[in-house]
Image 1 (tube, helix red, strand yellow):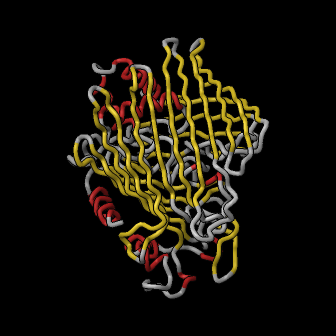
Image 2 (tube, helix red, strand yellow):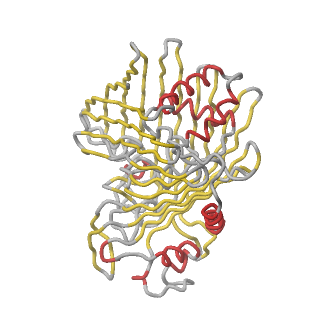
Image 3 (cartoon, helix red, strand yellow):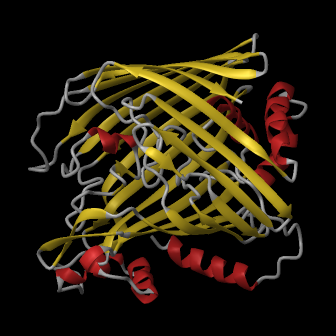
Length: 481
């Protein structure tokens, strides 16, 4: 957790530094909205060693890496370049999608879908922007479903420049190099209203990237203070720092904090800073901690360390991802992660000229997404903020899991693509963390998209057997403009 000191130093230096070179604000690429295009971006990241381990990606920094594949992968270059052309105007609509869905099963949360479930008969998403000058971008966006109603994701204002960009509004976060899940922050739940500071262009020869965000969660019951519960809006802090150690190896550190709300009241900046530098004495009362009064616990903290190595196996590039996350500290030591989650992933962008493969194995220890101060867990508007697996268990079950995922895609000559995903989950128990009545879950997704008269059409199937032993089945049709 010592990376927070370095983050603070870099942030102070950035604020003090004049922005005179390439001082331009940047729009973002879509995040969990256009799966076919986002796969192309993931391919570019692996091939070029793009030194960023968080999303959404700033377009301005990624474009500088796009030229590296212009000769070696012309089709990839053309597809990405054609998409980002829509951002090279003063204003425009960048994404619009409608989807109709039929389901004959129990309600299931769709993965990374901002709270949308199989019970939703339809949903619509759209994003647009207006950039009056090089220092300001107004982004308007969101989604509407008959079940979850409106979500304001993509609605925010961006101001600043290359080394300090401020986003105010419903700007989303994804603090992981993984494609299918993010242990700390993802798009599984609706985004929160907040403020984010980040850099567009990497800093120094180490390609340092930072992100600091603060948001306020939706109002929730079950906030514990002095033996009683209350309703309120907890705060949420995200921190990220990454550096490229070599041209093929990038590492990052991440922190999140859930705090305050209800009777726990407001939290001062000094309280936040103290929780950053001394998580043991802020969150762990008793034992070897200096914190005696448990009512003064700061809140719920998580941290992770991630690594992505972009390598070559013969002429085939691939990314090897390793991530270790902790839900708490261990042995009352600030530098030790407790209740760990281990992840290993391999992404092969070109298994063949038209195929890709993504394999991820995760072992999550107990106590994730449940907390004694927040009875609704680590969630926003009823959905877990982190890994989608968190929506597959009961809120107060402090359990872990073994998750194995395989993703395969196939491109066809007729501008169409097939994507298959399979996930299997086995919940893990430690001592008396939950009643051991879960079963092994199996989740299968199939997406087929094709182009017809300039429109992107899609058929989507989601089926399987969940951790309660219940089968589910859902099919939908989508259209993108």
